[in-house]
Length: 432
Image (cartoon, rainbow, N blue to C red; front, side, top):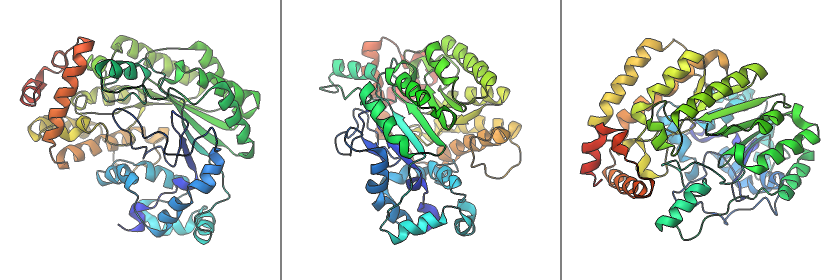
């Protein structure tokens, strides 16, 4: 692979904090597993500051990036690039003024070039501080999404333990009041505009989120720190909203898979009427305060056939859709679990919609530019067309899917075929 196909500027901007407090190099290569994360094998925020980890613990990755060595854990971004979706790698390059399509030219003109050179001559070292944080506050969650795992949902952890799929629930959170305040105190060194995106679990019901917001406000940093959050559209917390209103910039990601009742199954136990109501409420709040909002999707082999409901909703409201990658884990939720005869009608419906809505434009890299929302969404949907057309069928995944759903339904007392009757032959053949 050429340098333009592997280089990422993320190691000069970004650090990620996982739900147990472990520090990671990137939000996009967390190597999620169905049951648990590989917790315990990484430095932890309880004894290592994010700035220290960023400067010292990521040097080898910066060297690899500069020398063109591909990272195994970057495979998600490579896959995304292959099918024409805008990867996290391309988004991080944009922050450095670098574009894959004009890599050599934009790399030489990048304002980050002196920092890249500094790292090249200092074994990957840097004197920068992270300006882009993804912070998983824990797995405190009221949802049991079929594609998620107990490391990201306490409700799923309880259910999986009952089913005998795990022996013990994973750690619930690193973010006690004490550790939150310690983290914020250590950010005194970061005196530049910073982006902090918070996840759970469900962010709005995680106590540490409110503690974080209040601590940032108390230090007067609410004018220079942009807050991002992702919510599952099941709850509304006015006390948290009131704190968000004190920040100059807020980005709201609203997680939803489709706007049909299938969403209730996939994002169990959500209710589509509540989801729609809270979508409207967040839109109203965002318009009032000038917040950026986006629909966050994680298309799976179950929801892909209903995905157009999201794009149609977004088109009618000028909203952007963000899906950072193609789902990789669990393997049996990947889109290529579907055989080609099931994919083709989906492909045809996507292409018909694209013919009616696509505007002529170049590649849209900045997925937060409100002026290119329509083109961005069309570009994103086209990436699913390519994936469905090109990825080989995974028959083993279909068998695992059938087994997984059948076991979950034994305790949830629902049936996927009530939502997707057209999947009956496919699932029955796989052992459902």
